[in-house]
Image (cartoon, helix red, strand yellow):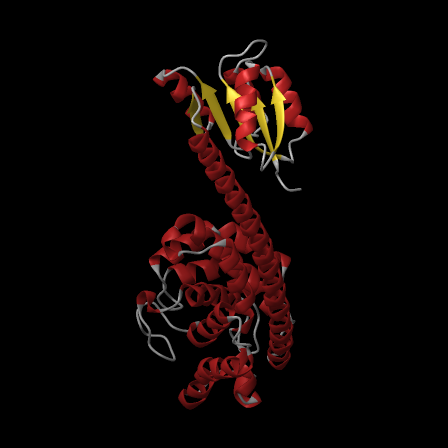
Length: 363
């Protein structure tokens, strides 16, 4: 509805008539002789009123009492309120501006000035309303677009997860494992990552990142698909040459990820790639394939590295019997399985009981 009405709330009839004459050629006029009547007319015509001219001193309900009522109903930001007063008190004006009054008209009126003053404020509020409506519309559109993009990203993530799950199961089948290794790696990774988030916020882990890292952890051994059965399933110790072939599962797995993980999900791809290529790196630089040292190794790869070593120790493999959980923990903390970050070892120790429980649940 077009706002085409001006409400004049003034107890003196002659003053109301003078003000009405100024605007009658452009607006409909509503008149009230006290604040109570003015409030009633405003509420009855709220969608049509473009401005309120409000006297300060009136019977029944004065101008400030009207302002208090409008403030309580949060109407002052919606309609320009212009006060009418014969007073020159700074205190009067201060009180009005604190309520949100936009202008003061001082008696006696100067018609051209009053007309322009009211017009300027009506135009300003109209522009403000249009702008707020535009922003609201655009915000709703952006939220809808973001929801659509989020849904598309989740569908892409789900597709990647399904592919990763299938590939991981192939690796486990070739390893002659039960199918629980990947599940254990994921839950171990999540438990350790959540402790790092609590204890070492400098790594910048968040719930969302932990979700991604836990899913990406399933990719750590994908490159073992390329390792010949004679090496992968050898029950005894590998020769130096065979071990070099086995080590290539990190770089070859990373190459595979680069070729089949959809690049639109860059963060997910980066974690999958880093975990696959670098989960055998060690904090002292003695790992492979790139000999990275310290925090050159992505935090996700460091986390999965500990999870993978622990699982390898407590699970039976074709080439070894399982270690008990206490022994496995001691071996990792004592450096028998390579050098890990002191901070990650501290977090690893903090989640010891949780790791033991997870190992039992997924045994």
